[in-house]
Image (cartoon, rainbow, N blue to C red; front, side, top):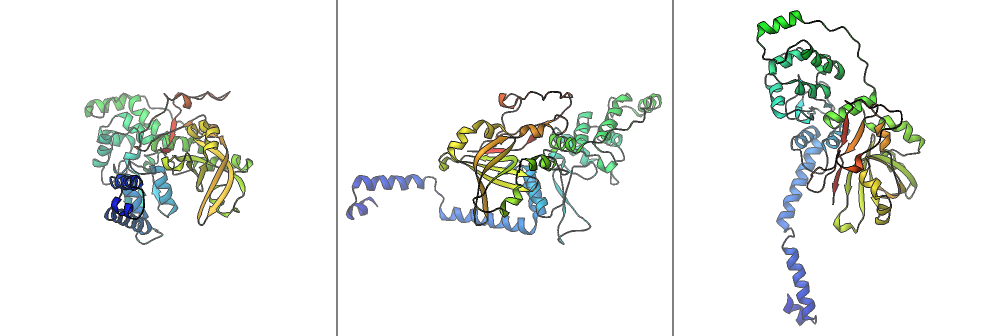
Length: 398
């Protein structure tokens, strides 16, 4: 190469530098066969997702942790493509995510996606397997039946209850937690107690008074769902805040594609992904989600410098800027960014959403030790010590 360039009139130094650049790329550049292999994987994956979105979603969820999107976004996309998603349940779930037959299906082969016990925060693998393996064919009859058959501890039962996992027994979250509390109240410390003593304890136990537990508010439902399974199948947080957002003239993500090009407007959403590629010269890309879909945000370096703290530490933001459309791709060029995370804090009577951070290797950091996450309670707000802190699974790549 070098001699050929010299013969054609190029300086030898220039020719050698060109060769070294090509040689350097050859150390990591993909050959054609490698590129073809990736293309085949993309084609096969796309075909499965198109024709079998239920199977595709279940496979992705069972392969976690991996990839670009968190389980909440995979579930969201599956539901957008007609897949019915069902929550974890003691009488239906396995440890992994599974598929279930449904009577009325939008497609002849479509199944419902049943979330597995692995999705429940704080439920260890041994307890999950025990609940699934010893489950009778007719299903568990009560919370106590689960406890006695599996011999799992009360912490595991509480984890299932907080995930609303006793619904098939007619027990919503609070009633299930109350039933678990009653196990200890009646003096039964372990499920393996001898039958004679267990019967005596049951005979001598003082029956608990009948009580009426208050129903969860929609905000509490969302807060408790996110705290337990890192998503909510009942409500999206922004659907509960839409009335407030409308007063700010915030445009839902789905409506952005209908707005004219180059129009200045505002949108808002949970931050799912932050990207700052090394090849983008300091440009930051955000993916926001609301109850209608996702919005793509482009932040130039000078805007990022102005709003760095808000962009990096917020969970919910409002972005104002110019809408740009290129073909089917729509994005907003940010001009102003406002932190609306306190609106999330109002959901669930003071429950807060704390962000989950991830770099390119998907390592989570931050949390209570991160000073940026400390927030003073709003005036007049009394926090119960059992209030949940729930996680919005945002991911950062750079």
